Amino acid sequence: MVGSWTWSRRLTFYIPLALFLIFLLFPFYWMTIVSLRPTTETVSGRFNPFWIHTLTLENYQFLFTDTTFPEWFKNTLIVATASTAVSLFCSVLAGYALARLRFPGSNFLGVGIFLAYLVPPTLLFLPLAQVIARYDLFNTYWALIFTYPTQLIPFASWLLMGYFRTIPKEIEESALIDGSSRLGSLIKIILPLALPGVLSAGIFSFTLSWNEFLYALVFMSSGPMKTIPVGAVTELIRSDVLGWGALMAVGILGSVPVAFIYSFFVDQYVSGLTAGAVKG
Amino acid sequence: MSRSGPPPPAMQAAVPARPSFLARPGLLLERETSLGVILMLPAGIILLAFMGYPFVLGIWLSLTDSMIGVPGTFIGLKNFSDLLTDSIFVQTTGNTFVYALGTVPVKAVLGLLLAILLNARMPFQNIVRAAVLLPWIVPTALSSLGWLMIYDGVLSPFSWLFMTWGWTSQKIPFLGDPTLAIISVMVANIWRGIPFFAVTILAGLQAVPSELHEAAAIDGASPWQRFLNVTVPVITGVTLIATLFSIIWTFADFQLIYVLTRGGPANSTHIFGTYAYQMGMSAAQIGVGAAIALYMFPILAFFAILLLVYLRREV
Image (cartoon, rainbow over all chains, first blue to last red):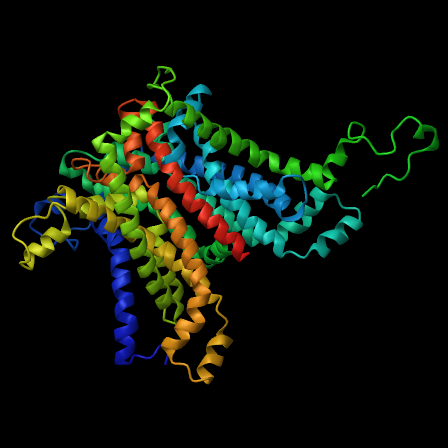
C-alpha cells in the first residue's frame, strides 16, 4: 500500500527517509541560520544554537561591502562559463567522431578519453603548475579555462557519445544523400536531436567548474582573481570567532547557483549519469 | 560522396584519378577517416597539453630535486625511496587507506538504502530527490566550511547539544584529537558521497521493468524474494561501477581535508593529496610532492583498469 500512513509504513519508510534528510540537510540548515543571525549571537553561548534569536542580513551585507566576494563571483562565473563552452565544443566533435566515424585509432582514443576521466587533479597539479608558469598564465582566467576542460571533456564526450548513438543512422544518411555535408548534418540534424545530452553535459561541466578547488587554489593566488571556494577558504577563515557569520554566508551564496540549476534538472542529471556511466 | 562529378576531359591527364586533398581541402571533412581525426583534434590537443604532458613532466619532476623556482637535477628514485622511510608519508599512506576503505562501503550501503527509499512513490518526490542531491552538487570547499564550524572546538552545536543532554561535561574536540579528527573527516566524506551512490543506484532501480516485479508477485514471491531475485541482479552492475568511481575519487581527495584539518592534528588526517600539496607547494619541494602524488598512481590505475574491464564486459 504505497503512500498510506500505516504504522509499518512509517517505521520502514518515513522514519528512515527523515533520518537521511536530517543528516544530509543539517549542514545547510546550520550554515543558513548562522549566516542569518549576528555573529555575536552565535558566539555568545547564551542562546540555543539551533535557532535564530535576531534575524539579520549583516553577514551578507559584509560580504558585498567589505570583501572581494563580488569579484570572486564574477571570476567563477566567467571561468565556469568559458570552460563549459570550450568543453562542449570539444566534446560534441569528439563524441560525434567516436560514436559515428570509423577512423584509425578510434577505439584506442575512446578508451583513452575514458581513462582521462579517472585522472584526479591531485595527481597532476604540481607539474601542471610548472606548465602554467611556463606559459605565464598564473592569475589569468586562461589558467583555469585551459585546465578545467581536461576534467570535463572526458565525461561530456562519453555522455554525448551515448546520445549520438541513440540517433538512428538512417536520419543522417538520408541527409547525406540529399547533399548535406557531414558537418552540416552534425549541426542541423544530430545536435538538435541530442539536445538533452548537450544540456546535461553543459550542466555537469558548469557545476564542476563552479565547484573546482585545487587548480584554482594553486593557479589563482592573487586576491581579486580567486574563485568563490578558494576566496572563502583562503581569505575569510579568520583566527577570531567573529568571521563565522560571513563564512557561512559565502557558503550559502556560493552554493545557491548550482543548487538552483540542479533543482530544475535533477531528472536530466539522473538520466545523464546512466547514459554516461552505465551505457558508456 | 563525390558531389563534383567527373572532371572535364581536358584536365583528366593532369589530375590524379583520386581527388587530391590539396586541390579540395573540403574533402578532408567528408572522408570518415580524416574527419574523425580532425574532430578529435580540439579535445586531443587540450588533453595532451594539460593532462598528458603534465603527467610526463610529473614523472620527470619526481626524479629530480626540483624546488619551486629552482630547476633541479636528476636524482633517480631517491624521492621515492626517501619517502618510504618518512614516517609522515607512511602515516599518510595508512590514513589514505583508512579514509577510502572506511568510507566507501558505508557510502555504498547507505546510498543503496536511500536509493530504495527514493524509488518509492511519495509526496514532494522531486523536491526530496533534489534535496538529497545537495551534498553532492554544491562546492565541497564551501560545504566543508559548514562542517568546519559544526566540528568547531568551541562553537560546535553538537558539543552544546550533548552537554545540554548531559552526555558529556566538556566540549568535544572533533578536529583536535587525532582519532576523532579522522572519524570526523570520514563522516563529512560519507555525507558528501551518499547522494552519488543513491542517485546512481536509483537510476539503476528505475531501469528494472515493473513487469518483472509483477510477474514475480503473481508467482507468489515475497517482497524480499523479489528484491533479491529481480532488483539485486539489475543494480549490482551500477553499484559496482559507482563503488569503483568512489574509491578512485576518495583516494585522490583533497579539498575536504584541506579545509577541515590541513592534514592535522599531528598528521593524523593527511592523505596523499594533502601531503603532496604540503610538500610540493608549502615546503616548495616540487620533486618530493610529485613523487607523493605518483605513489597514488598504481592504486588509481588498478581500480581504473578494473572499471574499464568491467564496463567493457557489460557493454
